[in-house]
Every structure is written in C-alpha cells, then in structure tokens.
Image (cartoon, rainbow, N blue to C red; front, side):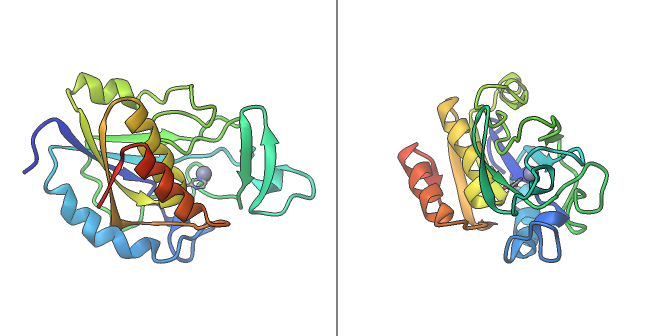
Length: 200
Ligand code: VGL
Ligand code: ZN
C-alpha cells in the first residue's frame, strides 16, 4: 500500500476513447485490467470524465466546413477540432464497463461550451481551475500517478500542470495509450520529461 500522500489519477477511461468509440485510441481498452489492479495500491483514487455539451466548440461539427482533426484558433490558443465525443449522459461518455468505479472522486471537465479542458487541473486557457488542486492539497496529497487516455492529450496536460503546481508526477506508460496526431506522442513524452515528470 502506498503512503497517504500519494494519489492515483485515472484519466478519461471512457467508451468514446476505446475501440468502437467516437474518438477511439488504439488499444485504449487494453489498459483497464492493469488500472483496476493498480487502484488497490492507492488510498486516494480520482477518476476524470470528459463531459461535453452536445454543442461543444471543440467539436468540428460546430465549425462550418471544418474536418475532424483539423486545427482552429480559439481565444485561448490553438485547438484541435475533434469528432463529437463524450457528450454528457451518452453511452460514449460513460466509463468503460469493466473499469472499477470505487474511486473517491469523479471529476468532470470540458462542460463549458466555449472552452476545452484536457488537463484535470485547468481548462485549456491553462488558468481556469477545475478545483482538483484544492481537493488534493486539502487531503495532503503531494505525489500523483497518472494513467489513462490519451497519453499525448489529457494525460500529458494533466502531468505538465501537476508538475507546475509542485506535485511529484509519475506517468505509467504501459497503462496509458496515445492518439498520436502528427507526432504528438513523441512531443508529449519530451515535454513531460523536460517538466520533471517521471515516465515509468
Ligand atoms: C481527450 C481529446 C479530446 C483526452 C479529450 O482525453 O485525451 N482528447 N478530449
Ligand atoms: Zn474532449
């Protein structure tokens, strides 16, 4: 059992990010058993859930003529335009059916139409907090282990923000899978290493 200052944060293990889903990550479902087993080691477990309104502005469908996976400029910076995914209350937004749900906190993110939220800590403007930092600090947690989907987006952003906030951050690569858009997986690994994130 890990000490009480360590939390496991399971990022976006939802149907839409698994094979057959709207924004499927290759082998996204293959990591479920390993994540379930790892939960036993931690006294604090948080699940995040990507949770978008149907007209979310990160969806290509909301931008006339835009193709999924193309880029656009938003007031807060560059944004990938995704296929519609993780719509609030849909089957795609539900957790993978085999994922253990006996977690302490389920943190939803991406619920404001105007702004996407990859990180578990901040929306994509990198400054609007989700509240997770306060939650972890109040529980005396100083070290976080991240697993889940996708390595190069929500896991990466969460890891970088966690490091910036002063947590000791570990990403378990074999319990994470990437989308890999134009080399984004390689870039994410380099960025995480540079930020002092431990990749195991
Ligand atoms: C994610 C793209 C859009 C993720 C969420 O969980 O990595 N990626 N929304
Ligand atoms: Zn999303």
